[in-house]
Image 1: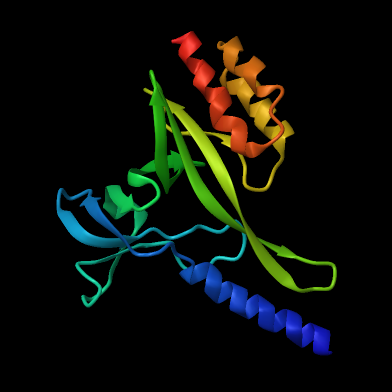
Image 2 (image 1 turned 30 degrees about the horizontal axis):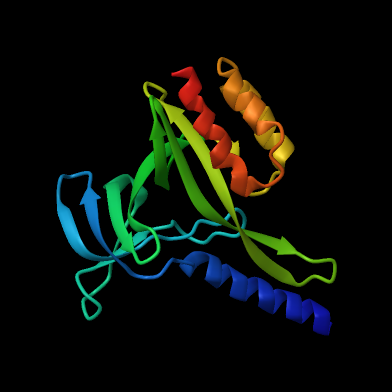
Length: 199
């Protein structure tokens, strides 16, 4: 009975965390689809793979004392954020699985753009206690493609990544060969650099 109540409490807490899980407030520019521009402080929500209540929304405030306004993905064209570690980075909405999703624009190599985001994944342990961890997802998209293609999944291993590489880069053997020896997801971006050989 105690274990069941503990599991239920953990599940409820995790549900709230999944809804409100956001990065820190950062200085930034919010460019909206209607053409308006908002400068101030921005929070990018961290999406979750499992429990989710409501929609992820980007939060904006003019300064730390100002009222917070939230925007849905379809209202946002792109976002510029400035952090101490990464400098200025750009977030854009791309289509994945026929839905809009906000991703960080990592790099463009020729006609190929690489996108990434941090995804929260919730798990249940063998004793019924829930816990969460963060994984990166990586998508790619060539000019003219209507939606981005997943290379790295938050919940699947490197064999899935290699399968996706073989399919997406079937006309670029350099990337396929560079992907074979990779043993850590952190090294995926280094393999994609070989796309330069196929431009």
